[in-house]
Image 1 (spheres, protein in one colour):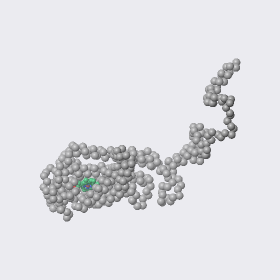
Image 2: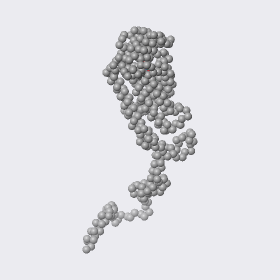
Image 3: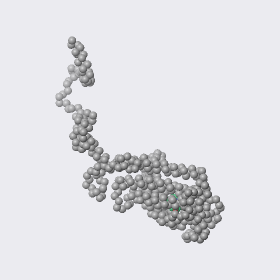
Length: 397
Ligand code: HEM
């Protein structure tokens, strides 16, 4: 009778886990092994107030408390010593703590992470993360794609249609199209724009096409130099843009024939150019949309980013909004001006010479701006407006 009860007892111990404990015991020491001294120090006595623990074994469980999510850091410390989650949860939602720095000088002191906000295109999350989402999910991919599409479309147009050439022979007689003042205003603006565009593109998209071939060190230095140039070229661009605006505004006012020009697309596809005054409706659109409207937005937001607008509180959300506005407007502006630069260089015969020397051939004027040519011929507009002499050679093909 004793044997079955012993077997049952053994099974019970196995089932209840005792067997593991028993099996885990070191094999019984030989009788000769001396017993450990009673005074031997505890093997791994943890030191300090906070001890490491498996959170699944800490009792009571913090989440067992119905007010778990509302626990203060002090309450949490009582159930889970060393767990600072309530404090970090508060920091993450944008709670502003105490700071002895004056609010006027350090308005954001005491606030590590900004409050929640939902910028267009972002999730409802803290503002820094929301801004990052807008930048990385929208501005960079869509802005970059737009620029590539514009460059691709222009390349296709150039390959398909080629340069817009003069149809008639040049006469050798010149009309002054831009005075030295107009040209210097234009070129100062164009140089500042080019510095801004190149540095802006490297800052925004450089990590995709330059970083892999340059390596981090060189790319870091390049971006740092370009970013500094960007900050200085911005104000120069702003001043020259104002000068360009007032220099060219008169001849960019709407006039009869502009709508017709637009409806026919300027004759760009048909190859039969539509008559226009000194500037055609396409140039006027570029002037009002690109120079005036986008110029205003780009320069305004850029001056905020440069911290040059007096009286403004330069806190993080101001900079985030200014950055997003700046990025959208600059990408649109670059897209427009890529078209302008194309037509002003390889896209149209004689256009670049007009802005370089100030003079165009009569044939060029008649073919591209017929009403303007007629006015010059009728004596309503002087063919020579400045002291500068026309170039001796004819406009190069
Ligand atoms: C960076 C390279 C640029 C080149 C190669 C270039 C070239 C030219 C050329 C050749 C013209 C004369 C067009 C004609 O005779 O009708 C012109 C006109 C003009 N450009 Fe540029 N340009 C550049 C950049 C800019 C920029 C950045 C702006 C302003 C933000 C600008 C504003 C103007 C304006 C206002 C005119 C007068 C025509 C109008 O009012 O639309 N240009 N440009």
